[in-house]
Amino acid sequence: MRLSSLHGYSLIDACHIVPFSLSKDDRVTNGLALCPNLHRAFDRGMITVDEELRVKVSPTIAEDEGNAYSLKKLEGKSLNLPFGSIHYPAATNLAWHREYVFKR
Image (tube, rainbow, N blue to C red; front, side, top):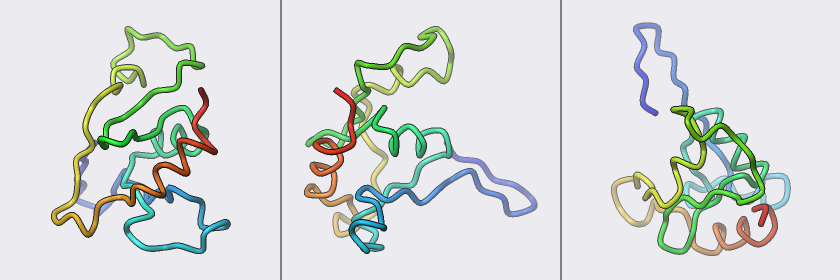
């Protein structure tokens, strides 16, 4: 979600993949730029990112899939990646999230 405002507001959060409280890792490779709703869904394990940098949605959630903002509509979507692979999320961090946070 991209939003611009004349007042300089943004609806993008910097989301840690491995929580900073555990990793003390504030590098860009331990982060994702997400809207607040997706940030919360990621932190709670409702979504994750697979090895091919695509969104994976937890099968444990129930939602109105007809809603325009349904998480399940994101299943299999590729991430919009930053310029330059040195800024991509680290595979090890994403693997940690899939193992320890994502709800299967």
